[in-house]
Image 1: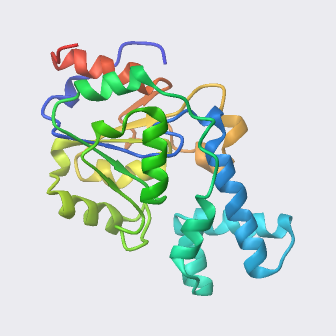
Image 2 (image 1 turned 135 degrees about the horizontal axis):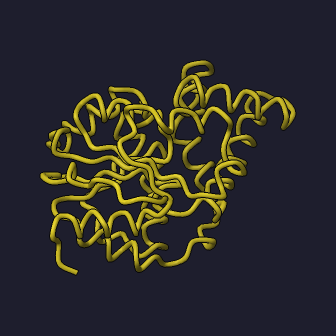
Image 3 (image 1 turned 90 degrees about the horizontal axis):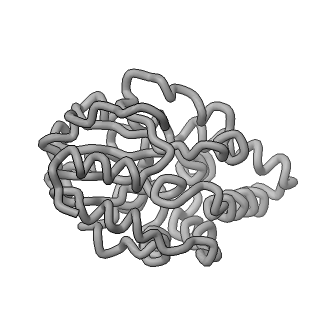
Length: 238
């Protein structure tokens, strides 16, 4: 993105929290597209409907409940373990090492976490392929959140309690604006990660809403570069 944003708000941040899918890796890798396809296949098999009908249900649940999984649990009482195992059984080979991101993460003062609506195993696989796994204190997944997903307040509150995080001393990085509303309301710095040239291809129309909302503190199309600029503003060594 153009311009030089004021990064002084990041002074005093002690916990850096990152969403996983389409945030820590580029959306054009189409990694999440594999998960999306497997979710649709799961819904179609469960409900014995066509692929087209399954996708309508899938996206309706995703929008209304935060994840398709949550909708299936509430509406159909499914086993979350079976679902998570199935939808994350994907090929991670499209991802490549991200040394610039790894170096930028290493410069951030304090602790770093991954908070995802996906599974811990998937998060570890992604981090390993990117070469950034050693830079995180922990992964907080949908199981840790008792299957309550972002953007629900309870998911964040469970995460904060588990890791002793003080929201006004934390920053949240997300690819969905709606998932930044609760963090912002609790005093966290918020950053929306939206790679240019990919949004229209990979996103539902509603997912593009609220990019200019008050709860979005910063927007970047280059996570590694943005983190480097934050680290520079904090005087972190290279």
